[in-house]
Amino acid sequence: VTPRAQAHTLNVCDLRFIDEHVERFIKEGKIKKEKDIYIVDLAALGYDKVLSSGVLRHKCKIMVDKATASVSKKVAAAGGELVVGLKS
Image (tube, rainbow, N blue to C red; front, side):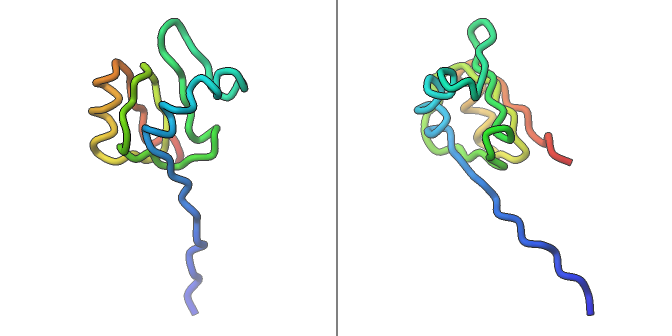
């Protein structure tokens, strides 16, 4: 008998969700703002992956374990940065 891998639920959000909630997250102390860029640690918010749906209008540095290929382009177009692969 071979051991089965434990199932892991992947918590996913998209750029629309981030853009719509940036100000609320700031007020709640869930993200920070350094100068003109929002620092969004999605792992700290409980998300494992970000999808590219929606438009990002805020300049954000988004840190996440996984992202779809087009997320980086959309984040860069808004003047931000995407940092992927933080989990081991």
